[in-house]
Image (cartoon, rainbow, N blue to C red; front, side, top):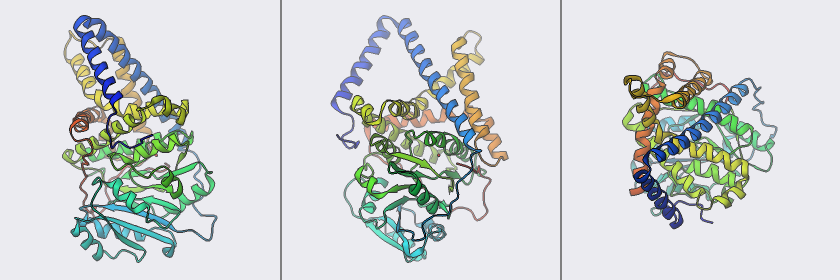
Length: 451
């Protein structure tokens, strides 16, 4: 069975897509009112289920905020070698910051195996890395040309050369909590043989710098502070993050590493682990990183994520019956809610927003009872997550909560771009540019107990 998106859509999927499109178009031509009514009922039902699902996760996540955190001290005196993979490309300006962050990791230096994964055509970053005073445990691994030019390709190259039994992935801009490796190792010690991955929460560290950064940081606070802990506590499939995830190397190799042709290799790997009946657990020590401060940076980043969610869902649905047997019925349903919802919701945010605005401005247009109920329920459930997500309250967070209905439609712009790219350049990787953080800490949404 092919788990990679290298081959794109399969012939049966293309035929099915054409058949559905032709069927819907034909129905609109002959029975437009009935077709529109049927689609409305279908979408209402789907969004009702998604809203109820999100509410359940928010409530479980809120309850978990009061759970006592386990001790981070490791029971093992003789700690093993731990491998850290850091793929970098065009990141010369951030090398000094990265070197300082990695030096703070609380792990015996002689047992740290850090690989800086550099591309062969990026001499500027290599030059900056050599001047940045990385620890002696850091290797500069040059990823050879060939294969897809993307982060997962570099990670796979580093994986086969890693010395440790445990693997951790960081991005160039990350500032991980020094205790994170020990917390992850303890989780692996106590988590059982089916624990394949440990995810640390990600925190936007510059929410006060721009409105889009405040929204991005609040979104992360909800995702990593409420939703993902709720899923992990019930041993449900997780769309893991692209950084600060820790793996058992043997399981990662058995799963085939990362898909070099999927632009959200993290989400894809999380679902592939679920297909193998392996689990992911959350830990509390976070990783700080900077949110995009410009919509021109936010949009391609979000578009890449949504395109990758589409790719992951299409791979899983090549043979739905097989995927269901591999995951189990419960996890298969959760996959559809989490991953399918992450694809569908962005596509429909903007149209629903337009309908809501039209209903408020035009006396001749109404959403009706069902539409109004859905709108109110969605806004209320979203606000509950924003309000109760763990973290420090600030002016930037308050503004983000109050302007949330204006933020979600932006996802539709990214989703439409993702659809276009999926059709014309499916493997294109829109890299997010990074810059060194400011010396003074920003007004950020902290996660006190976390996805």
